[in-house]
Image (cartoon, rainbow, N blue to C red):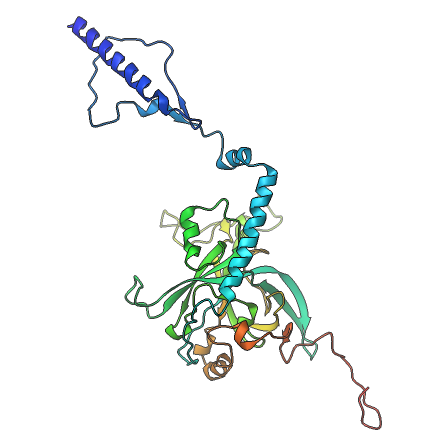
Length: 387
């Protein structure tokens, strides 16, 4: 019995060795062939391998994960070749964008008039900082600057093609900030091929009505909004990390003296007597920030059409260089509906087209905003002329 088991073990070892020599030609730079130095035959129970499976064990091939794709690309391409590729791609990107702006390339989509039930698309912007501004009456304003950078329409999904049967509005996908395609997947790059635009760093969806649909490939500018308009912004707040109850929930804290020992900033009792557990929703220490926040009803005081900058009133969630969604305010559904509808009807619909409306002034101001290029004090002489 032991002799027969030993013979079977020797036969299996020979078969494994022949399979190893058969697949040795498959070795390449990314795989390493690991074989034992000495084959040891033990009198143990063995089983034959099925014919429909790969005879070579997977453990014999170990992938080389010490080098990344970026390291291999750096070895294959010299710095001169990499600079040439980036320069040629930039030229191709500019030509592609200019081709999409040509009105003779293909027919534009039909335009519709604005109605109270219409809903325009928003834009994706980058928060670049804050600054003060003043009204003509001397009131100081806190302004947030949002820049619209390389914002294009990527795709439009009508209501008929939506997966949700209860949806009453279409979806418009926008792309924000052009990025390099060298380290992006092919599946992600195919998203921008049909629209004919360069790959984007950030994409987002906006709900639009059927009459406000925009053709893919159309660029969006800051002139999509006008001074005096009210907008809603969407973004993620600044990540504060793990914080205590005093900063996270505004607790008063424990007394500074009178027997307190290392409990000055602690929460104290959480009131679980009789329950034997922590009640859901109890205010306790934990992560703070990095959550979605909406800020509604922010007024636009100024629009810079040259650099595509929006001067929005108040604070906007998020840190500098973070992305923000800006769209028309929904507060017109409240008691100021009539006033907001009159204002929305005067906006470009469905968006601002430079080839139709022409170039605008470099800066558009609200009527109540003080401009530093105008005199602040005007004197009138006895003859009635201004000086």
